[in-house]
Image 1 (tube, helix red, strand yellow):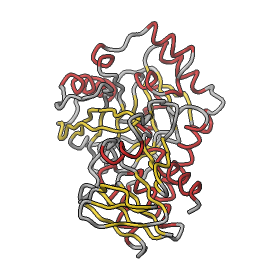
Image 2 (spheres, helix red, strand yellow):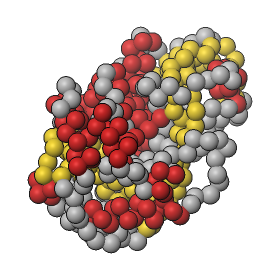
Image 3 (cartoon, helix red, strand yellow):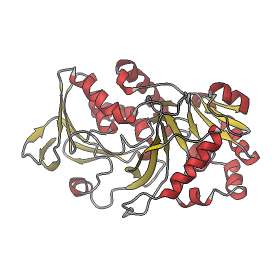
Image 4 (cartoon, helix red, strand yellow):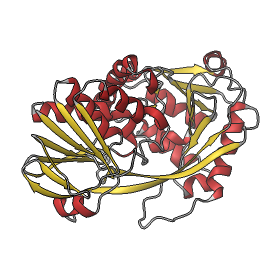
Length: 374
């Protein structure tokens, strides 16, 4: 079997991974010379903790298993099962964490409510003031800026994988057959359009104007090396407001009784933070839904995040080295893990995982492979 994958972000690359590892030939086509979109502009978190119960959690847990398997084969992924801590301060925040730790699926997530001292024993860099922390042992991390290249280099070893960068697929020319902007035609048994936030052009022509997927913009930053290990990923209590796992009466009480900081509310913010292999910290993020998006980044969210992080670390942040914005595709029905649609004979569009893309992509691609009989 021959599979054509359009798009070299994490969703497309994981489709290529499954196809190659099932013995098939793969041609992967990417508009840029290498992927440059949301798959690189994220935290690299394998984020199980906040997922909705049911299909979303099952997908994340399966993906977590697959990431660990792939990470054992591809050291360049930088996979590490670091877990996460969400430090909390108020009684209302503690109540949300207690409710999460009492969920029927809490053990599957690795949830445990810790005292501040227990949290600092796991992550000594947390020297700030907080009362308790929610631990999630199933969370993990990879290196987003290098993961796609590391996966591509491993795929090339198979002898059944071809990467074509700097080519944009422009049209469908037959069953499971596409033409790129160099005039070359690529024909396979299946074509996967994993085009990320690129929802115009050919995607719109094939899927129609009512594609149930929207674009979301975020802002993030990365520091110079911290100078000490940050042994876990870190979230703040605003993540309770954002992730579906925490919904319920306790969260309703938090929302009613404890307002977000104005900047966090205005920019729909939460803190997520991961240490990179060079010691720097990736910190974010914001959420902007109204299109067209602003073309510039704004400073207030960065100032807010800096204050939150410094309050948890009990020390000043290192110098900020990078600031950036990214855009990802999200199903308008956010309870859906992904939008998977046959758009032409032999051609499937797979898009819209939203902020779950890095976490869930191995399992999303596995499901596609199973459904298409690869």
